Picture: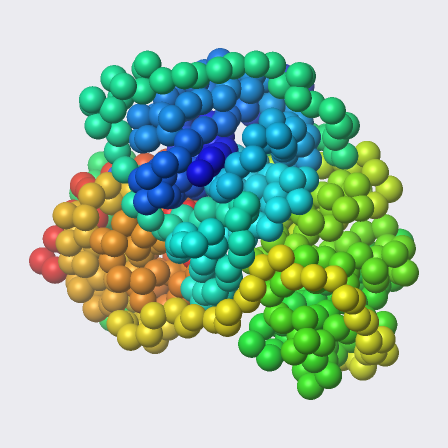
Length: 257
Length: 304
Ligand SMILES: Cc1cc2nc3c(=O)[nH]c(=O)nc-3n(C[C@H](O)[C@H](O)[C@H](O)COP(=O)(O)OP(=O)(O)OC[C@H]3O[C@@H](n4cnc5c(N)ncnc54)[C@H](O)[C@@H]3O)c2cc1C
C-alpha cells in the first residue's frame, strides 16, 4: 500500500507576530516553528495505517523553505519512510489552488492508495487544500475526520459536525481524508527513532517544477484587527491581581454575594 | 450583483445558520437565489427562488452529487458569488465548487471591506484581505459573523432540481455526541481549563477555583482531546454552548470555535500569559499572569 501524508510548518500561535514589509504576510523572523497541529494527527493516522497493513510505503510531503525539513524530520521520526520536500521560499504567495495543484502534480503518477492531510492549517486556515488535492486527482475525499478505519480496501470514517455530532461516511480507496483535532493520540518520536530518521531519504526539488497553473487570488493586505473588546487588562504580582479581581467581581457580578 | 446562497439541512431540519447567508446578501445589497438539498416540509422563510433537491433521494451528505446539483444551478443562475457557511458542510463542498468553476475562494469571511473579503489568520491574531483574480468568487462565512436583525420572513418560489451523478462516498447516518456527564448550560459560574494548564495534574487548580466560586469546571478542546476532561465539559462549537453569569477562561487562547460556545456569558475573565491572546477581545477583564500562580492565589483569597 502506498500512503502519502501532506504536512505544513507553521509558527507557534503564541508568538508575537509582526507584519512583513510588503504587508501581505507575517514576518517570518523571530518565530518558533512547528508542525501544523492538524497534520500531527494526519501523520499519526498514516503511521498507524502503515503498521496495520504491514506492507506499506509512507511518504511525507511538505512545501516550504529549507527550514521545513526540521518539521519533516519529526514526521520521519514518527514513522514516515521517506520525505519529499518541495522547496519554495514564499509558499504564502501561492493560493490554496496552487498549493493543491503542486501536490496533485507530484502525486498524479504515484498511485497512492491513501492520502492524509490536516483539515486546515493553523496560520492560513483555508481548509481547502486537502479536498482540492482529491478533486484534482479525481478520488473521493472525506473531510474533518475524527475516527478512521481501513478494512478490505475500504475507508470507514466519522466526520465531526457542529455540536459534536458525527456523520458516518465510507468510501473505496484510493481516497483522501482531512484530519481533525482529537482523531488519535500523536506519538512523541523516541530518541532511537529520531536518530533513525536522520538516515531516511529526504528528497528536495523546486516547487516551480511542479507548478503548472495560475492562482485565482492574492493577498491584498495583512494587518492587525482593530481592538474592539476594550476590556480591562490587569498586570502585576499574582497576590495583588487576585485582590483587584475580587474587588471587580464584587462590583460587577453577583457571584460573590 | 447576484449571490447564490447554499443553505444547509440536517436531520430533517433547515439549519438556522442558513439565514446568516441571507443577511450577508442583504448587507452587500446583492440579488440572491438559494440552493438547498432538503425537503418541502422544512422550507426556509425566504423571498426568492429556492432550487431544491430532495435530501431523501440525494442524502444529506453526498459531496459529489451535491456538487453536481449545485453546479447545474450555478450554470443557470450565473451568480458572481457563491456563498456557504464556514461549517462542516460548507467547507467540505465549497472547494469542490470553486475548483470546478475555476473561481477564487475565500474561507471564513468575517467582513467585506470595499468589496474585498476579509478572513482571519493565525487564530484571529491577524486579518487578511483577499483579492480575486476571477470574475466569480466562492466564499464561506464565519459562523456568527453576519446575522439578520429581525426574524426571517418570506415564502420561496421552489424549483425542483435533479441529477443522475453517481455518489463517491456512502453516508451511513449520524452518531449523537456522547450523552451524560454534566450539563454546563445551567451553570451560573464556569471556570474553564485550556491547554495553558500544561499538564493534567494542574486541573485541580481549575476545579478548586470552580468550587470556590460555587460553579462548574469546563474545558477547551485540546484538554478534552488529551482525555484529561470528559467531552461533556467541552465548551465550543463542537461541545457545549453556555451562558453563565461568570466565565473564567484559564489558559485559553480564544479560538473562534471556543468563543462560539461561551460568548453569551454575562461576564468573562481571562487568565493568560499572552497579552495579545484573542480571548482578550471578548474578556471584560484580562489578567496577564501565569495561571499556575494566579489561580491558586485567587482561590486562597476567595476561601480565606
Ligand atoms: C471544526 C472545529 C471545531 C472546534 N471545536 C472546538 C470546541 O468546541 N471547543 C474548543 O475549545 N475548541 C474547538 N476547536 C479548536 C480550536 O480551534 C482551538 O484549537 C482550541 O480552542 C484551542 O484551545 P486552547 O485555547 O486551550 O489552546 P491554545 O490555543 O493552545 O491556547 C493556550 C493558551 O494558553 C496560554 N497559556 C499558556 N501557558 C499559560 C500559563 N501558564 N498561564 C496562563 N496562560 C497560559 C497561551 O498564551 C494560549 O493563549 C475546534 C476547531 C475546529 C477546526
